[in-house]
Image (tube, rainbow, N blue to C red; front, top):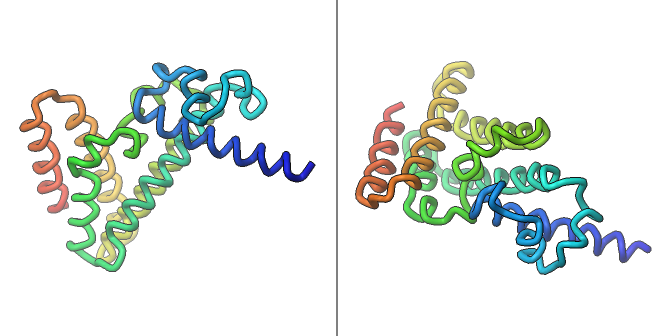
Length: 190
């Protein structure tokens, strides 16, 4: 019995990771349960043994994707302080690699407009990921009082998410690159 619980937990984890990748890559609405389960190496029929609904797996997948993003931001600033830490965070998030790699990128930039139309559970999951991102960015302003640092972090987080979204939307790669570099340059001054 214990082995089957462990296997079920591993299967659930595989489904959530596959969902995190597929949802960021293709969108919430455009990804079918069959595609999700196939990406996890499973058949469609087993989905409901693990989740009540697509929205339930979306909430968990967005949480996983947000943790991955925030771990990447934390790694980018590790061992750095002040403007060097801010510059590293901006360059990491607003990179061509991040722009070009939906599957491994920020779930808020990839799915934000779709998350608006999901359940409170999924929106809460995305909101927590955003709040954690703001917390990381707030730490980049140690010389400011807590309220001022938080205001800057909120503005920077919104600038990052918006710029990455636009850089992915525009088909002109020169303009897309300019969106990334210009935004990084301006946000570095905040």
